[in-house]
Length: 570
Image 1 (cartoon, helix red, strand yellow):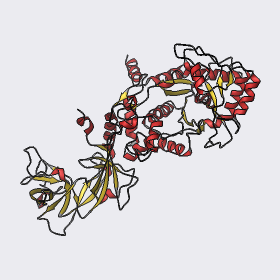
Image 2: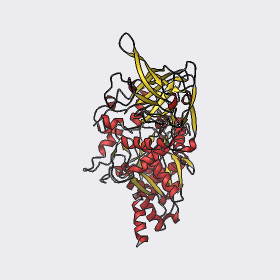
Image 3: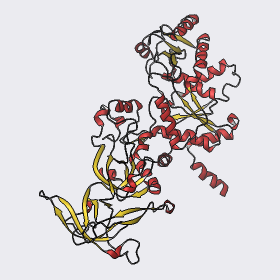
Image 4: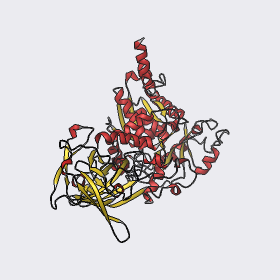
């Protein structure tokens, strides 16, 4: 009984994809071999949605002692380049995964061409010289059958001759296509004589000008899986209607290879799961590219973008991204996930790994009037209370400090436990001080606050821990760096921009980036580099930006200590 219960619990923890994989293993399919692949098109940077597919493709291979290969689906040279290839490699490595081999769909252009020739020779494909509009119109609708192309029954030799012509510099783009001859009345629109080759003269990022005719995705994808020995082709739900076509082309390929006796053995099994959709976010690479090209964002790695490079630059950890993806799971139903869930995962992870430092974003001068002029002390600051092994660093204390302007109120309500005249607060890692007054300019703005310190209240000294209700962070005015801080909000101002019928440019949040100048950070923080996770105490999590220099530090706000967005939108 105990064993049965244990197995039931284990099965509940498996995704439906893993359950299907285990079923195949139990039935001895593919000789017990597991091989997956992650097949991105190098036409943009990877985003958080791709990360979900990466975690599944690589995760299944890792869990069942298999291999996950990386294959670039580079069949459209008009949109693809090596910059995207390099960044995809970087993003997968950043997430913590390792591929077995790197392949390209272009590795199989010769094999795919030969397969297409076989299709023509065996009456399964023909050259169509209609326009794209004519072809689309003749395909019919899901409830009405399509109309056969006037070229559907053209002689094989004629189609072969024209197919060879397609792959010449003289061929005119759009003048002809190769279509599979399947079923124009099939209720699955993808079966209605799909286009499998088209003419493109743009040089390819790997093959240059060798090819002028390129295979379509549906013709290249399944065959590439088959050539590589993929056992499980795991993809998102929009490929469900493509699955019969995927299988049909592999049937033809096996027939060409003389494998008709065991037509259904050793073929990739396509399994589909739901895409990752986030509130206030858009995942369309076409629209993300438009944001980049039209300068609405600074680039693919703008910290407001849902790209992995943008999240990395903003300060997200790969562990937090993977934790978030694991928490939302894999289903057969599309859903809109709350951005707050992702930020909560980031916040939880960074709490364990972020270095605590002091920074003041809206500074006002605090003068400790009874502290000796010119004297300084090095105060010990714990790097991370969640991990003792991270050690400590020192922060300089002096007579003149910067504190947050919001931490002072001249006429404070009873429950204001920060700095106000006549009351005591503790300066973190330093002394207890009592506010004695403030100085204002001609317009009534507070320009300086005065306080006196208790020399016996230094943190760490015996008897120094008498209780006061407020603790404030600070930096020494003479031992800090001026810095720029970039604070980010949602890129779009509607919850589901992908479902909104308006132009997506109209939905952009004008307050998505706020740049704060003249902030101050302690010297230790100013030396931190991109990739180091920081917590500005009492404010949030931050990371040095790629623009940051020793002379001009720049920090990106990763996420606040609490979910301010949820509170703001109640």
